[in-house]
Length: 125
Length: 196
Image (cartoon, rainbow over all chains, first blue to last red; front, top):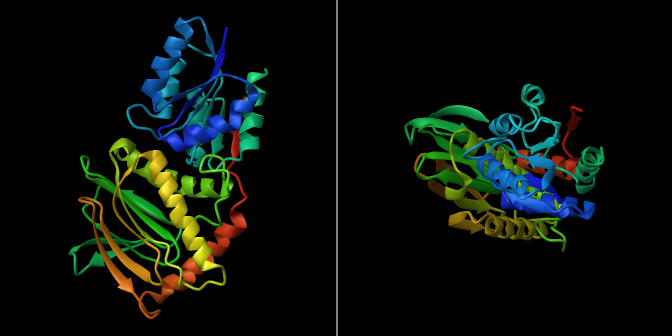
């Protein structure tokens, strides 16, 4: 069974930067450009008998933003870690994210080693 | 940013200072003066939402490419702030158009302005190619500053070349201070909060 790292961001630049950063962890990586795209790809991965190790998710995205995505995702998956990677740094937004079911919140710009450390912490649990 | 009323355009005028960004669906004018910094005007023509970002990529991009270069990531983050605000208002990154100005190298702030100008132009070329955002107008480089007025409702831009340092001179000092801050902070990463 494969365990994927799902990178959800509407920016292809950010998605690719995140992929470059975490690929040293050895997990297969899948990219999605918004919440709708991510939910469809997660369904497909699980349908094939594979699983999600962790999602790295942006907040401001068209079609389905990060807050709506986590609400939908947590309806069927209470435990898979989902961390936020965003430019949003307001404390109220971060607390809203905690309540909604995110596992952590990273504010851009990120350093690759910092992201690797956070992802590693969750996927090795 | 300060808000006033433009007598010429008969619309609210928001003046952005170096390092600031603002997106809106209001029928207004966004104004600034671009020296060594880059000014990106983005708009979603279908939704009639637009925004302006005024920033610098603080240093020379290395050979690692856009996706792995930490200097370039500062520019990417600046663009993310601007696009994020447009998306929050209902705009869609996939349909954005851009008009881009600045990176003039005569601002004279004690740094190698030609090198910084070239690096910022390089970043813009790489970033907009990677993001597949259409560039409607690009006016970068040269030994002068530019006064810009952007109309976010329709994407029009009025540009005036400033060849002397009398006009908009307060921007020279503010830009120099902003660039220094960006160089000091360019190694800083964002905050990390873990909930579990």
